[in-house]
Amino acid sequence: MGILENVKEKAEKWLTGNYDDETKAQVRDLMENDVSELTDAFYKDLEFGTGGLRGVMGVGTNRMNIYTVGMATQGLCNYIRKQFGDNTRISVAIAYDSRNNNKLFAETTAGVFSGNNIHVYLFDALRPTPELSFTIRHLGCKAGVVVTASHNPKEYNGYKVYWEDGGQIISPHDKNIIDEVQNIRDVEEVRFNGPAENIELIGSEIDEIYTDKIKELSLSPEIIKRNDDIKIVYTPIHGSGVKLVPMCLKKIGFTNVFNVPEQNITDGNFPTVASPNPEEPATLDMAIRKAKETDASIVMGTDPDTDRVGVAVKNNKNEFILLNGNQIASLLIYYLLTKWSENNKLTGNEYIVKTVVTTELLADIARKYNVEYFDVLTGFKYIADVIKNNEGKKIFIGGGEESYGYLAGEFVRDKDAVISCFLIAETAAWAKDRGMSLLDMLVDIYSEFDFYKERLLSIVRKGKSGAEEIQGMMDGYRNSPPDEINNSKVIMIKDYLSRKAKNIITGDEEDILLPVSNVLQLFLEDGSKISMRPSGTEPKIKFYFSVKDPFTDGDDYDQTNALLDKRIDDIVGAMGLELE
Image (cartoon, rainbow, N blue to C red; front, side, top):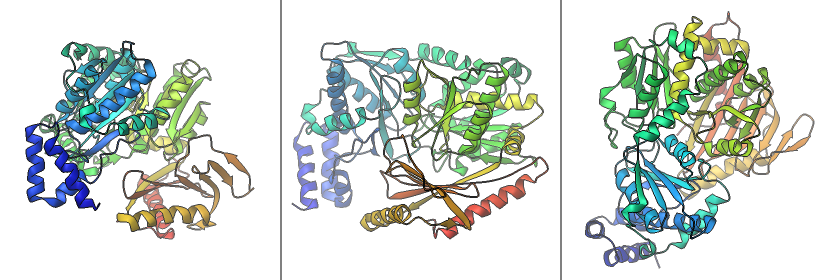
């Protein structure tokens, strides 16, 4: 059977099956008027991946809609029941952000859980993803779901699954849940519309407990009192941070927090930005304009589900510059470890966590304070897993990844931009108390260690030939690694597929005690680090570059920054890479 015949057969089932009239009308319209869109909507089933669902919204088996959400939830219910027993009282928590159809998808999910005799704690309005993680642990739930597509374009929606520890699902639960979801072959198997008494609305009472816990993380309450008037501009970028971030900053003691009224409007179309991704420079433009109007010194913007935060600060020319994710992580970890030391909280049993593609400056800072650090694969779920495995044995201080996600404390098990915004503000107050800005503090960190500079390069190669080219890149560097790059010798290769780290100078090999992953890292004699990671969901390969140079108080920041930028340019050129 050809693709088009298969598509039409699947679409016909939606016309005759147990689907609502509006859905059937939309399918009929596609069949009559848009074969291309019909094909895209039905040529495959929307894949339930290791984190959950994500896709374009619309009718069809390859789209996010109440039927694909319902089938995924039924599979999840079946797995939960197998894990915890048919007769046990089981509860789950559900949250959702500002994306279009999110309340509908959350209520659909709740109805299916209820239909499987699982008690549901459903938030009464949009809430940050990390609050969902907190709620699972606080209410003793066995699992949780947040309806979000994070920072993806407005056409997308998604569905992330969390386990009883509050972290996103990892092995073996991820693969086992996928198997159960794939076993649901027909919408008739889904127990939609369970009894209402199984669904309990939650809201402000959880907000208070959650923000009170965040307040307990404060390491400098007296410093905040002395510097409570720091001017901060915060924007939720139309997302779920609109209530909780300002509430948390106020509760901790900051009195000069300005918003961007146009971006306080909850709107899944994200009308004021091209992208709701705080990694994109233009996303904070409106907030920076507001900061100039109010003479604020810090700008913070969170993505729609409030797990990541972008930051802009003033330089010595009174201009706003954007910090990258590695710089934000370095500021936060330096502040946390310094204050833990000053407050005599370090006992030798504490640790931090970073991902393998995140700046090595975090490891340098940890070594200064004799604090253990863990490297994990890319993805905050692996940081959460380290926290779970060390619970009751060691104390997690903080952690982060270069993609703008950070965490402190152990009561949340995912990156948390509510906590991060509080920590950034407190770090700024601490710096101001010492007569510095955040940028001054970053320069001091570079002076104490080295000036680190990082850059991410994503190369897209579409189609079958593109996938083969990406695989060819990985095979080439894996099987025939260069002796040197940009006139600097390759001295170490870490291959996370073979789980081996090889010292090129001595020939010694060590095992990498992390899960298998298609990641390769080259370490150069001059301190540069190059990481390569193909995407598992997109026709893309990511190259992470990190370079460094000694830096002293008398050195010129802009000049050193430019020199390191050029070094990355030269490495990219030496590797023959081009940006699409």
